[in-house]
Image 1 (tube, rainbow, N blue to C red):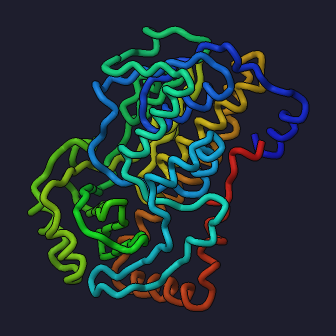
Image 2: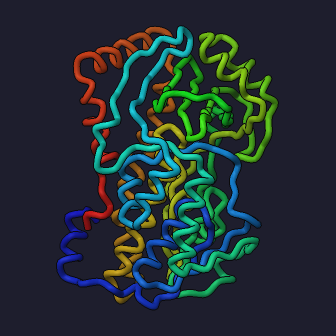
Length: 386
């Protein structure tokens, strides 16, 4: 379903069907908490079950792009987000071997919904506080399965290892991409710019967080793999060894890493089935994506806003879930394909690398605004325009 079709629905139905509905969300990540808040704003009675004992995560940065920010702003979080986030000024593709900046693409023109960098726990904190203020019951240390909870709607937002997904999609195993990633945060002030340090068969993304910290994600192609998840500690010496040939500036950044986590990158299919009766999937539970477009959290946030909105238009919740899947599946599939392409483009070598870097340099010099225009399908998408 396109936004235009949803506009037609909005014009023929005043909504309000969520009022009094009992909604149970499994998983208190960014997507789950956004869904809980969105349904609560529509008058639903919402509970969240989270298996963790506390709403804390491995320290990590996250980029909220304008498409995700519009949904969060519409839920009344604009001021709180501005306090804990750092507005991004630009994206800078960089040659990791020489340290030379290839191009600079301005992000400040995205005025209606700024592109921001966050420390993930800060963003979780903002959402959790808003949920509680809206009357959402958040139950921590509650490892519930879909069959163990009750409600008019059950939202499976448990992430990659979603039990809700397994209920509806028993097949569809993931496969190792041949890439592993390290994630770390170091104390290092930096300008509000996302830098993509590209080298053959590897790359590093760095961007600042508030309070003078720098988020680092480093990816390397290799035949051996690490288990999925962010909680697997690794020796920083392994990270340094993998990037021993990069420019001195990047080496100095990596030398500041004293604690690092490693995980294998797996490609998961988009779930064939997103809904079954009163159970539906959201975010990574439905459509995991590789971290090469900064859209995993943003797509989950979009999902959450759309799910609550379309269900509010339908007395029969099954019709709302059908509309939700029809709207979301084509968009998330396109985003996942774009992320997969970036995984290849960041790691080029030889003549392909030189040609690609020259193209980026030319684009940055001759038509810098063309970069954002190419991303309009992603960044200009507005789930609040229903």
